[in-house]
Image (cartoon, rainbow, N blue to C red; front, side):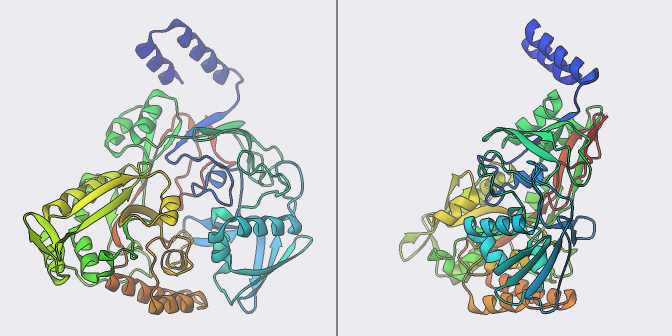
Length: 509
């Protein structure tokens, strides 16, 4: 707060602003409420936990799911559900935690959970396809769920933030969803912030904070400046170039944590040029992964050879690939393209790409620009188009060829989520339009396979097929970057899943 007052004084030289700031500071120091402001990199216009792709309700501690992901060992564990079992992988018995209430004081029982899950599947086709639930029966705190087919990994799907449990009888899902988390919504300003207050009857012990603000700014530089000035206490994904400056500030701590996210080049396989595997290989060869990791991410990343980080048991040892400008030119030659008067063309038609990108992940537009420049040297015209919400745009429009896109590939510690979502014809994130019968049959086989070793072997086989067919290009695995005021904030944990942020344990000194 002192840094904030000092910054305002120097920049504005305004007595009144300084007085206001001093009053606020005094309130914090003399019996004031405990509060933090977390600044996130994605803005949202809706808090609806069943459809919001920014997952703000879960991240802000408003809602919770039946199953929790243990960030340390990537195993699933009880949360709102205290136990579950199945004899055949199709009929599942869940026992709900007792004594849990929604933020309106109503009990979270089987009937309420059933209604919440049914509402999620009704409003989100992606969740319906992911859960594959045929029926749900509720009896007190017991749930019996039958899936459409045997589905051994079904409980792991209930980690997904869009399966958050809410009281569906409170219908203002957009502005004030009623969940079971440690914080309730006080006020929501779409695109700006959600103000939160402590839910005193939270089942796992009332939050240490009285209030919190989960605010949004898609400008990485602005996020860094907000921490420097004291306007934010915790900043998610500060600007990479600002990390040295932030680390030089007394009390500020910067954490760089490996995760299971991948930055990839998504290819629209419905576009004629990209139906040629040699064109896809040329795109893949053009991507200078090491240079991008060093110059754009400043080393806070692992070069990707596939969708899964190399430490995962289901990440294959891929064969060495041809890379670079000459390799890309060679692949285009095989596809029938020649460079004429500086333009790469085939049958008199130039090779051009429309490349989508979005600014909420600051490194993606820079990756797009590097690719545009390198492709230009081969005579390929790449037009970059900025979009806001990639999932919505790619699902609704097919007027694009490539997209720099970022995705969590194993947020449950298992390959099934990403492979189903990205490459199954019914996958929620299958923006490339992949529809490969052999690939689909392998994924269907994975879905009914029990045992981590067998699943890992099958996932490796699927990943190798994806690599052979060059269904998308994988660029790097970025670290999760978080900077915060360690002189003020206590018990902050940078989660590898990026799901859990404002918790009941978060505190201020």
